[in-house]
Length: 476
Image 1: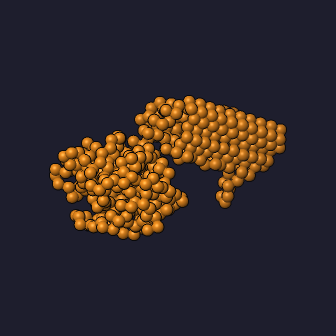
Image 2: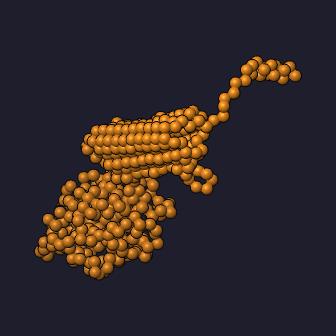
């Protein structure tokens, strides 16, 4: 980052008091261009609402207080914050300067006041730390974070004097053609010295084309030195105003997530086709194959292989497991487990260590014990399966009786043959077995064999009689 400063007032510069920091997150914008029923700042980037990215950046400053300026007409903000920070209500949206002026007198400290926007999710906490350090070192009354953009459209321009020092900020709406050609822009992130900030807000006017109170005008009103710090990565200041910019931020953030995982020892074989949320944790030497999506609060252990073509949402997977071409949601998977291809683990699924789930198998709200196998083409819903059980192909737990879900219990070492249907509630004891094509309608004692099918009949000469009937029909 590069620093610069204006001469500002000629009075002696007094050192910035090293008091506690106040962080103010501006989150009351209406977000009209998002064309959404959801408040703009609650749209997720890499699985986390934009607002919470801003809160995380602010936390890097270890502030004494964090204030979030919100629009009380927007639902869901308080729930998303979940107790983080204190909210300040901006009933009328009259500009960013007006938003900051809503901070109560009790919170108007004289020390550093860091102002940032809730719709700049790419801003790093480390950048705020650098900005605050430069502010304190320079003794400035205000320090601005700036960036140089190839396309500065939409941003306020930084106007400098011939000596290169900061002179002014001009909003694009109010800029001349010459000023619009300036590539250095204001990010909207500031550090103010509180004792100069709050009196300047009182003097703020709205004599501009939009009739709004601009926070940028506060910089003009402040008495004292104005410093600037240029950010190295211009992506950090990207403000989200529409879905296109949201997608742009998503691409940048997801690459950051993948980079961090790869630095930490995770192999991502094709980052371009891999999508991993920011709150996902993955252990060392795990390999994530192409066309895989891992979202929510998923936790994956070490030495796993995930993918290809796999979706994992809010699930836990133990060390050494392999999940291939499958879909997991709110599932808990033990160590050295194999799942897939083409299987689905629905919410409430719990697989113990060394379980094998084969192809085209669906499991819902069920526990499968250590070493058990459901090799293929089966459905287990609301089942409690013990250890070392084998479930043959085509087996189904009929858990719904038209009124409620019922449980099927299958104890340790049971052997379930192909096409067994369990009409729950029912229990199969340990070391018991079922014959192929059996419908289990009552409990099977331990060590027993259940055969629940009609006796097979053989009709001799059937094929010849069928052919004769076919010929007779054809002659007619």
